[in-house]
Image (cartoon, rainbow, N blue to C red):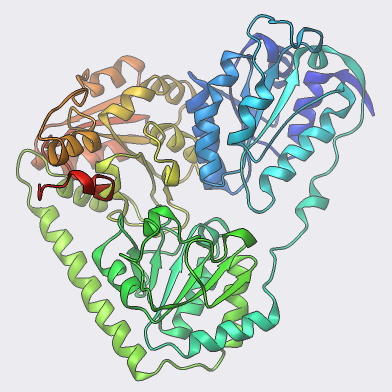
Length: 565
């Protein structure tokens, strides 16, 4: 027990949780917390330019580190309304973000006070849990609850509202509880009988396929997943956005599956007779909820830690609830001594030949360095320039969607995308957070010019804090996805599709960052290597062919399809 202000109690509780970075934007409602952070020897405060992008930084930090990312919104009202998009993004990705939000004084609630908004009602739909502190003495308890809720399966963001009068109140504050007790619980194992049944089903397969998803990636369970795949002789396809769930240089790696994946992995999913869905929901981005890229006849063994996700979108032969990595280990033990049959060996050999041809075709397309710059040329140059342990962050939009299956993910985790939320404006800020979580790794953030324009002010955050990521702006002067739809389905009736931009390399230099410009494909290799090696926050503005557009969501416009390209 110690006598202190509520603001100091918040910081003491953060220190007890082992927090090392807090992202935030100062505001009068949270000034007591910021003042206490000034004295903290353990926590580095990273001031941002916008609450939305600050939450993306905390999200990127959480996904890269495996710990909770913390964001502090110092202003009630508008400071908190700005959190909504970032928290919705984290919620869709099951990312453990703890948002601490300054809140109205208790005595002013429901009085139409200055900057009043019902923060609890506002944030509840986009978080795992939202609640409000009611007593200064309970701040350590509530902060502990925020972390335990965010990090408990399934992980996700939480929001804790902190009324400014309680932050200013001086009270006898209990010592922050140790997080050791609630962190001690191990990953949940699967039911032993179900695991044995699943092992028999997998052993009977002639054309087995593992589809690994976020449960493998977030649990850092690639070793267990690959050990099981090797026993089965099964290729491993990845759900979109989780192409780094296992290292891409393993011979059983097939890349991402489904409408946003590659043709080889998608063929495997269409033709497999037994599919192990390991830590994936088989959700929208993987399947579009259809059998177009999934075998209707396959027997599916579905492993998920969330019971309601098992068999939710497709009928399954068997469901096992628990941690993906833990259950992969149980299945490997149950299959000890299994040897794949001739049919399986032929299935996997054919896959490996097909995969090798896909990669060779990509390399050939990428080496063709014609102008204007084609996306394939840029992706090839990035594959050559990025070190083996590089982290890639991606935005939404057609260019990033095309890039997602093309980057080399050798060191999990190394790919962070908007996933099912499809958010434009995520990548650069998320990369800054990932870099702070993994300072020894190169971080490359890919963005379209429109999305970068939304978040370019965070160059200032990168420079002020010495966060040396490389942001590659694929500049085609338009909102590419929508312009493709207008071209393909609306007779080229363009409206709102073109985006005039400043020279982003010069903008970077004005902020104090390193700016690079690429107008010719022949310049790609040298410039990208220089940007990666410069050791400073870097922006690379790449002039990409404005006609290199692709309509990903053709399914949404079938009613307008006239056989257009």
